Length: 366
View 1: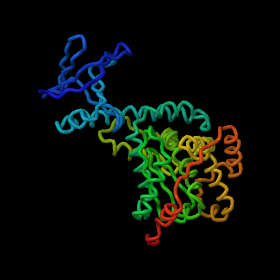
View 2: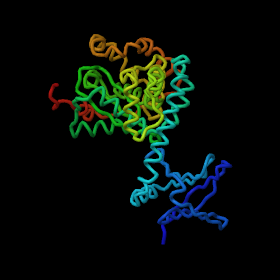
View 3: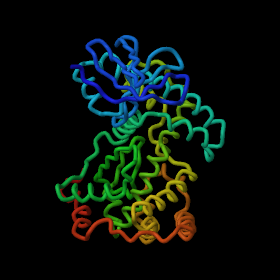
View 4: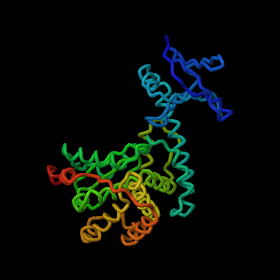
């Protein structure tokens, strides 16, 4: 007997959906409606789309506005792969369509970003929300590899466990991004956020921070850069200048490589003052939301003030656009006074913090 799943059917004419039972057949699918009607969709008549890895599968048929069937059960996606249908329409189809849409968005919003004040990128921000997370993840990975191709990462079993516990406590459960943090052995007192959820923490920063709370403030700030898609918005503006976007591509990796060739990778991470301020204030709200004190980022900045000589010598030149440290502290303290009393949760116990601080102990110097 053919396997079947609950699904939602949209006729393309009305926003209302209808519940259907979908059966998977050897050469297509059969839709059974609640009123007794049935529709047979041949495989070649529809495309299979999945915008996010954890999202629902959608079957699209016809010209615009298309009929759509949405199947939320993840087992349906697994069955499609087993049948080999992913190669016929699922991954290839959604990637090509997403890439073309992404390219169009990049070109249009990049021009708008260039024309408008970069400190007020409201239109660009609205448009980047339609970019699939999967493309941002690929972009972030490529940018990281371009910047640090020979990086030495730090890892110990106990340090890795402490870091995992640390990150799980900071990230909301409904966050669409899958964060992956690397600790790189380097004297730089800094952390970086790449599009798609890739984070980099330099051992120089980890060594300079006095407490897990101060590190939580820094990483909450970097997480906000990802969630607010600051790096992706910067890329759009770079591409508007370069004119290197090609709307047709058969492979997502090649497409993203072309985009990075047309942009200065380093400039993607060179956030404007407004982006930095937004990430600061958002970090305080994120910390409070997760049950911690919103003063954690202020604690980190105070630590920098006390270690200013190291900070000035270690932070790269391209971060000179950051707002003044005293200004950032003042803005955060003003916001924190307006927020309700924050949480008192502990981010790590002393032993776990020690293990995290020593995560680079066994990594040889470059």
